[in-house]
Length: 577
Image (tube, rainbow, N blue to C red; front, side):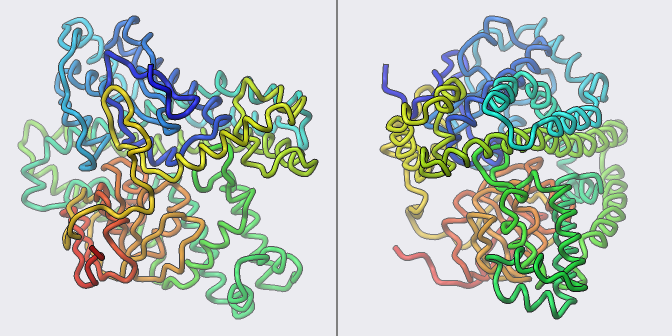
């Protein structure tokens, strides 16, 4: 047996051998630290297994196999594409192409689907139809408000400055407690993705007549939770823009800014600090790579949120996202009417129902993810307390080293940090190396040797295209200079009117959308995070533009067509050979 690329790697499933980074790449973009992986990956696998097991579409034997719904390979989290394709094949009315569109967009070139034993079984298909129908019509859906209340109570129960014993107890019970919440997130994702796939097929004629019509009919819902932090940060940016005192403070730079503001205590500054503290109280659990336990949030690293405010203060007052939301809501109703009238009469009730189901699913997906992230943040607070103590005592070089231990090793690390020092240092070196590489977007069977993976700094080979085709996920057109950003905590001076180009996005990127004329993302699909939020904020966006962040350079003049899914380099020097 080949040596795994990472010591926590899973054994690939022989029955369902194709894996991909679609969708999970925007949730877990980097190598998961050992502690985070050993806490969250079991919940992910069990939650997905429970959900599909209840559909009856798979046998107990199939579900018992290794990495059947997904797993860790080369340190990166992968979703089992073969498994999802088999579900689509077994589900009457669905196509494998529907799953590929939802999971992959137009990115990558995955191995073709191969029919396997059990993929055409009348009994499993009938059970799957019943289960999916219940999901689509909203029966037996989890109580998201009740789950949020439960998580808030759990987070509130975490002691300030917890003991080592308490931290171990929190960590040990995390997977069991949160598997239900993760399962809800996955169920909500299906509730938004499946209607979108069916609508894409049913409304093809209307789309050809008016490109982007379906996207317009799904925009401006006003119910997307992950759009709220962006709106609140935009308001903070306007407060800075209209205050000479705050403008001077921000002009002096973000490092040390919050301490300077708190020491001032004057009118505009005091109001800003009060509102910023309220923002952290409500949204502080969010931030870059927010399901990775080792990552900072806006609450643990407030300067990352202030960096967003620093950019948003330059946006125009006419870019008010609430005004955009109201406008989009009106346009959505008009688009729905046109879509309905351009659909053949017998299908009109179904189209209306799918639009409603998809809208409800998108809102539930973002709320379910917010609940999960809130719980992760509570556990992170307890783990940070212990990690920072070990660093202060000189046992660890930094906080990240703490997360190189697994859950099983945590008691030993707390009892005798020196016993694991050499092993943690060795893992850290390998962790950094894998993080510097780009994993395969998909693979079949065994993961290709990481020695052959490209580095993140490598440019794609060949002549740079002048036009790219992706998936238009938020309507309208935009033109402006490109700003390529790889880390939302370092927006590198994005200016109003520029086009944000990114390899992927999570909720921490959302505020930057408001500073941009348009958004282009390497990966994604119609129901990915970037797509949902861009539609809510009214920002033209194209996703699944493969290698866009590598081919496009800062300063290139871009034209983004969110209706047709096209990105064109209007002017700019070609990439060096």
